[in-house]
Amino acid sequence: ATPPMLSPATFAELVTPYQKALVNMIHDAGQLSAIHCHGRVRRVLDGFVEIGIDALEPMEPPPQGDISLEEALETVDGRICLMGYIQDQDLYTARPGEMREKVRAVRQIVEGRTGYIMTSTATPYMHPPPPQFVRNYIEYLEAAAE
Image 1: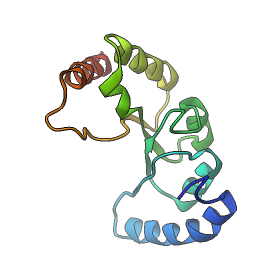
Image 2: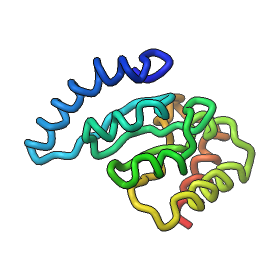
Image 3: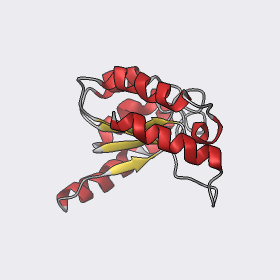
């Protein structure tokens, strides 16, 4: 429920206090918390920090998302872990070598920082996966391992 579905003010009123209460219960039970939220999070990212979550996933690059990974990491400043930024659609459509380039670009941004886990923004949704997806997923994993 992020913009444009909810304004930042409405997010602060209708989401933040209730999610914060739930996250406090999770933490009181000795567990970590994560919120799964696709899309445009730039204008409510501070709200997620205020909620007190441990992780936010999946961070989506533009155009699905509306914030660069560098800006998101600077905004949360290690207070929460960000996950994602490898767009799942790219795994279906990327040309050979493109996934490796995307992983290298992410690595350059996150190098020397903490609070980030690289993962795709969604799980595979086609079964069986097409050959291009398999090729791109293997390329993504190999590049990440490097």
